[in-house]
Length: 373
Image 1 (cartoon, rainbow, N blue to C red):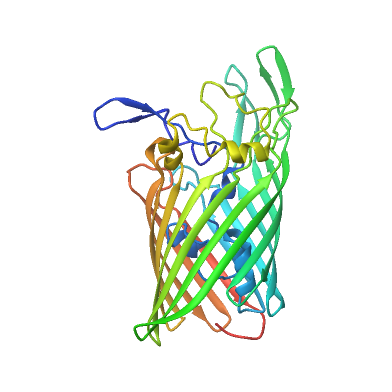
Image 2 (tube, rainbow, N blue to C red):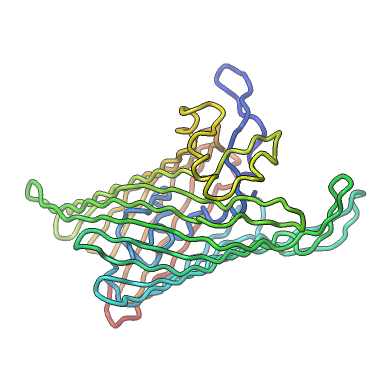
């Protein structure tokens, strides 16, 4: 909803013909938004980059390779600030090592949509409401070997978009209600240090399936919507240029594991459950395999570190025009000093007047384990 509200019903092709948008729509789309500034500055790449306090969002398996014993991170993103000034996303995450080969994490994602005004059919004001969504998560990562780990996460989701407002749909009158659901994540991570040509490298691969959970309902009727179940696969290659300088290239691919719902048939998948929907999502695009491939978004990012104290980042996010058309550059900086760190990210969309323009993210890191960065 919030992420696709800026899209029009049709796109213009190069020869002047109109082409209908066919995006995949879900409930609680904010669960798919990068919450932390580090990955946001790298074009939303994060499944295989080195783990930090926000690892559980991207890939719970990375928790097993955390070097910190105990750490906390807080991220804040003013949302759609070109349009409104009272909407924001906040993300709080903490982690603790249980053994040298395992860690646990807990996090809270909170989305405040600002104040909205209700009106009746005549346009008269009937009241105000402040929609909110949040997700509380726990995750665990365990090494299986020196280079391989697995992870699992669990999440409770609550989405309150309209309170308990009464609505009428034809001859049916019902009442809206907050949506509630639970979901799980599954992750895998492989990392290997290599020495080639007199230089040190690290090669990492990651895979994560997130938000595998029950469909969510916002009304007293039987209508239910899919969560943004998502498959993310990616790699990250880090090269040490010298003892003080290193650079990482990361590439992620994402696909929503949610079936396509035609614009003229909202009830097409009402009887499709979560697991059937996952399998259906690979072969239900109207344009066949070529359109299925267009549902894959690509995130690419670069990260440069000097002496593990200062970082500069840049990236690019690409989504096919048929499936939503989000395309933007990202950039950001990071600093680590003793027990404290800060990251910032800035988004630059390809097109003017994009509602995502001027999106800023800020993340604070704190080590509370007696060690320093």
